[in-house]
Length: 172
Image (cartoon, rainbow, N blue to C red; front, side, top):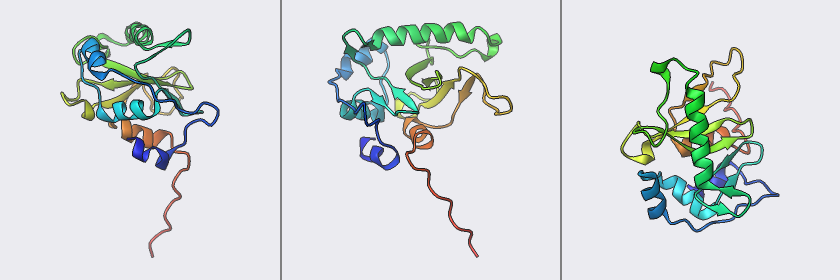
């Protein structure tokens, strides 16, 4: 994933990425799940990644006095379960550690929370993104729990491009 990172965005200039050493085996044992390879490659190469105006990708690490991945994950999942109670029971998403539950991996600058839908596949590289939107935009069609048919890499390509591709000229 990091090989194409520069092709669609640049990390925040005042908060450049700092790789962190992650014991993936221990993390995955703790979670009871394998994690997507592109996420692990991104974390290994860049550590926690801040896309400035867009989003923050959390990775398994502890930064003394600033961030603890385990605490963040537990708190985020707790808040997700509370928020899901606002939905009719049949529409409520399962949240990790429930089987097939949503697993948080980041958040946006607008306080939306980014999850993987682990129920999509036994292969974590096929997990798609679900966003818990903090506030709806009337008429936007966004649901409070919006399911995108995009994997992590595809979602990032669509949401954090530093430069939008120019439209192609019409064919004559």
